[in-house]
Image (tube, rainbow, N blue to C red; front, side, top):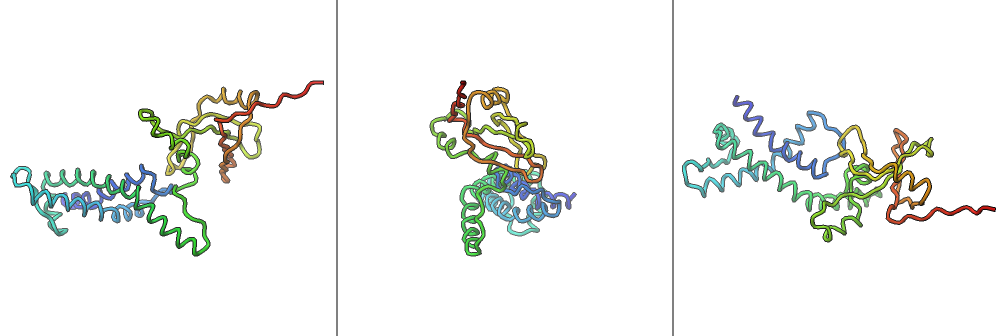
Length: 246
């Protein structure tokens, strides 16, 4: 039981931080193996646990009431002993959960960007293309909110801001057999099987085939499967030319 608690205490804070980094969109899309995930959790354990111990030590030095007081911990041995107490263990996990959230939040806002700037300076000296703000091409194309949508955030206080996009999807060798629709859901970058949810497919098909032409903003090509996805500018339709009848 003691070994289980020690493993629990020394791994869980890092896994919490890894979870926050995933949902904040900062982790690579590759699936990690168990040894890789353990190494990542061990590295992330350091900032989360140090912050948690600092908060609990301040708590222990300020709070004098017996039923709220906790031990002051400065060594690994003291931490192992203190977490044998259920009260301290619960406080450690709760504070770890909260501190991991704020640490990963601050990292996603400023730390990651500062690191990316430093990395891109080195890549530039080696004549290598700079790293994007997104962790994968999938996220850059299907998940990242367009600048024009993000600029409308102040005018939409109650409405959730999301990516507005209309896609035409077809195979490279069969461009005439396409499907078109407005995207409402997209897979997360780290999911192995990718997928999209398109709505109003019949309405958009009728619009493209018989009524309007649309400017193609950009194109995504899955080289492995041969799938082509074109994002059209759905806000500026153009009437189809009417053929002359003689």
